[in-house]
Length: 176
Image (cartoon, rainbow, N blue to C red; front, side, top):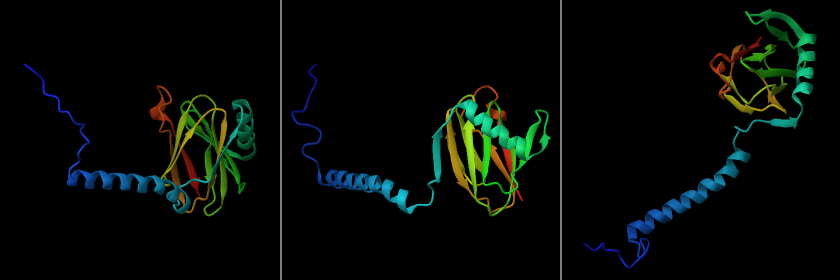
């Protein structure tokens, strides 16, 4: 039995409807490509972040000094420190298996530079209900400009699988 193979290519000749849909798809692709740049400059979803190289030991030293200076208590079985920054705009948060340290107490309406880093593996940082999402890597100090405007408790969630206790990795920021 012979297999029939057409002598022409599938794209030649295109029918009128096919040309229309290919043209619409091409125009849409070009439009969406340029929207990437437009949304970057016109949209308000881009976080004002800076990432700096830092060793995990250097970051741990900075974070420990911050905790020591502003610690007001401890919480839970693992004795996670509770820190009231007392208006200091430079605040530090450490991601480590399987917790966020410390619990931060912040003032509503005040601008903060939230320093975040991991001291072990890659973590995901999700601040809810604000919906700030970042990938946190060891060896980098991620600095997020953050102004809490609503009083209450904000949840910190690790949204990147970081090992067996990943589902337990939660934290808090309390805004007064």
